Image 1 (spheres, helix red, strand yellow):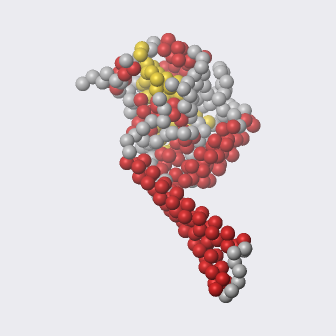
Image 2 (cartoon, rainbow, N blue to C red):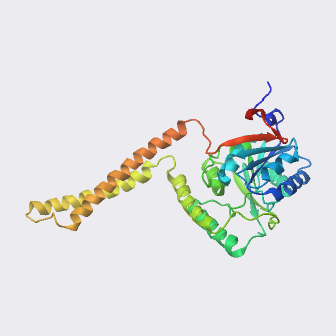
Image 3 (tube, one colour):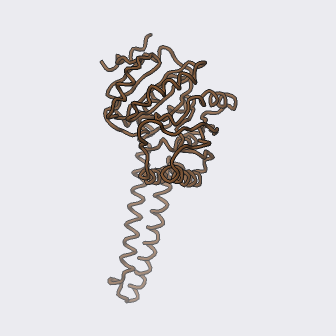
Length: 329
């Protein structure tokens, strides 16, 4: 039976190369040429996901008119994680490789990554930028600090979590539950699911065209996402263990304080004006709120695991070989 909704599914590939792009019109043609030169001996497809570009990026990809090039166009900017998730969901290859759209990653590393994955029976091979070509203060130092902090909290052995060049088995990549800004934490998400991961040195080039989309502002996003990952690692399936434990602790302490004041009251002392009385009440209320939050979180987790899969992005149109897919009609 012919799959009219996904033409690429008629001819499955060995490799799907997923490339999120945002205002990268000058990098499109060099990127495609680099992939073609690196993957001559591999059957592959390239899946560009445009994350709401305001330049001619979409028209440039459409103008390529190559059957091996597919394009997903977001209705607006949803972020790199959503773009990566959309590309991975659309992939038909046995393996999936992810690249940045700025030409800093080198596709010529992919064949070696495939060999390492197959030889060592791995699920994921993560790139490690051996000689990183980025600014010291705006990129390297914040990245170094973030990587060390993430490794300490998550116990992951991957040293360069910010490298977008990664190779996955398709079934692993398509079950990562990517959303928000979690693309930086892919090795941790995979580790939660029991995936076998290894790193290897890859090449890194300075940006030639366009403007970097990263800055110091993303450091705060990484910090907040790190708190989320710490929660995921320890309490993702049992949030009650976090909220319930602290709720019982606060509630118990409040109860002890109020019981102590009750004893004093029975001996005739005035406790109504004591600050400790209000502290005890506050602790009891906080305990009740934390336990209630734990119950709600448990219900949400059970709903999440039992519900149908939903995507956090909207694709406005889709192209294969520069032509509008039938699914858009």
